[in-house]
Amino acid sequence: MERASPRGNRTERIWNRQVDAFWDVMWTAGDAAGKDGLLARRKHWRGRSLPDEPGDKCTVMHDFQELSGYVRGESGESRKRQDRFWNCVSERLGKLDLQDNERLCAIALVKRLFPKAASEALGWKVDTSHWPSTVYVGAVPWIRQTTSTAPRLSGQYAAAVRESASDDVLAEQWSPFAEPDKPAAGDFAKLDANYFYPEFVKSERLCPLTDGGGTEIGVRDKLTRLLRDIHNTKDETGRALGPPSKFYAMLLADGDRLGKLVGSLGGEPVGRALADFTRGVPQIVREHDGITVYAGGDDVLAMLPAPQALTCAASLSSRYRSAFAAVGASVRATLSAAVLFAHVRSPLSAVLAEAHRLLDDVAKDANGRDSLAAGVMKRGGLHCQWVTTWTRRQPNGRTSYAPELLQELTEHLKKNAADPGLSSALIYRIRETLSLLCGRSRWEPGVWCALPKDLDVRALLRAEILRSLSARAIESAEKHAGELADRVWKVLGPARAAAGDGGSEITEAGVDALLLARFLASPGHEEDDR
Image (cartoon, rainbow, N blue to C red; front, top):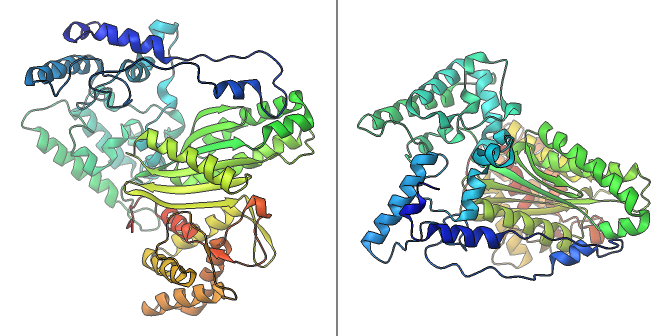
């Protein structure tokens, strides 16, 4: 910033104001036992307000002024000066650290550049390899499959990218995702994940190249052709690899009624249980190809590839219960979790806000805790929202584990990918039929609809599925319809902790579990957002 600051309009003053006022340190002293701990009470006590932020705002943190100090709308000269300021910063940092359309405040710039300045500021190097981009997290299963199925093509593509881009293109250094036994794949697993998508490769903003001259179009066309060769490569089942998924999962988890556990067990046993749980979180997340953002006490935040997210959440719930069982908890310790599947280019702030809503408002408050809430947020908005207790009492009286039931339905859809057993069109028809029966004009994500008394839901499902299969002349349609109807029937109704995991029969229904399973069967493809 030293080089750019003289080009700004009171840049140093803006920097000092924001840095001095932003950070807030909270502490308490006293006995934290009881239902409401002192620190929890202190967090709700807002004792200060931030100073006013004039001028043009940061493109990442919209409440703060960007650092150049110029206002683009004042005059053409002001706009030019603002651009010159940020061009100077970009020349120093590189386009992968500061893109052409970004104008940041001091806080956003500190967060962006901290890993680069950590050695000088702290005296040791911060390991940035543990922070892959959301685009990379979504692509992890595809990267692993590609380097295994097409190592030579992967290596050729990585070499071609390196010839045409700066060294910053090898942005991903997260070693758990590398394939050390695939030397032919070269640096493929280390590439900035934007270079895995043909439509992103065409963008100068997302995939900058070192040659900005007349040959750049030809270079991008060459990279696109090489990438499509990889996408067209067939795996051992004869299926084309295709592009990587454009979705990843954000997982939030939080213990339920911790104050009650402290009152029952005492602070020391609860502390030991939480410490045991926290120690196990990174390993569980790593086993599911994810990255732990934080794990402390009963709180967890992690990013994962879409296919592994729900099983990871289930493993965390099991670990939490086991940790408290080991210290002799007489009160059942439960964990609630939210898993939000989001487009890799969705704003992270919006994804986090929606994940918190799923956890706090849906899994905990609305469903009575001990619950899993899952949603799919596409670029057009929330596509579906399903909430359930971890275990579900089926209409036949049996108890089953909810993530396993959904996984069974998802695997059935994957296995029968060429068979339209539960197509999107069929799900929407089931939704419309149930809406009419329930007297609703429109179905929204997360809605449970009260069904007419004595309606045979299972027979309705079987009839709709059979109709779809018969229209396509599917072999053994009746048997197939019966099996699929059974799987759908098991996740159709609600399961609420406050109501004892559901009832002996389905009196309410929702199609969100079907939409979720359909999405998970092919998370790389954006379906119709009707």
